[in-house]
Image (cartoon, rainbow, N blue to C red; front, side):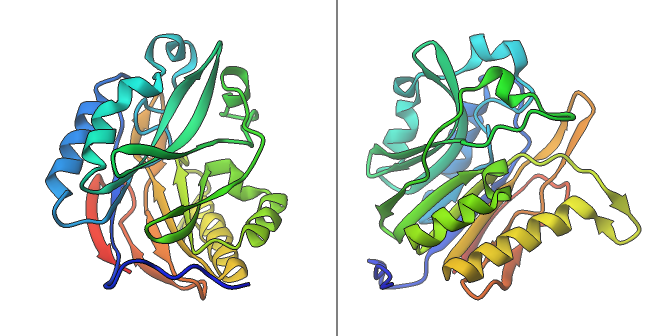
Length: 249
């Protein structure tokens, strides 16, 4: 299938914002500060899953979830640079774990997490309403797909992505560290295997942004990265560190 041609004449500058969100609404101000600091040196700034809220919201969700119209500061900033954030978003009487893409002063696309984990340390299905579809949209970088964490662990989603045939896949993640060994983290190895496979299957670049920090005993490992369409990791951030860095792809 034929790919979209990028409208960019030069390389795409992608900023990976590997941050440690707090469990309150102050994250929006922090995110806006980060965007302003990189607005002149980036074409796309990507934050992690639930970067607007923190992960273990539980009943705080009723106080801290956002209405889209409360995020107009991101719309304004997106007149200068494309922005992707994760947030708990109100949807009538329900809440969505969503990836939001802002561009040219508007919310260009919203993906509601479809596969909500509800096992072990995870209770997302108790608090969030699941999305139903995986869709692509056209950004200035070509045909684009967004996913949130667990979505990418399901082979049915890989099939959907192959059908969508995107140029760019963005994965927003909040993955707790587990599977420690002398060689590293087993969860990191599993994630990298998945995204490399999906990149090569779809012939698409993948931007993977995972958060860091601690919440109620859970530690998040970061190591955000960019994988090219051949499934090769071309850029990677360190584990556990709060770091914001821009790469050319």
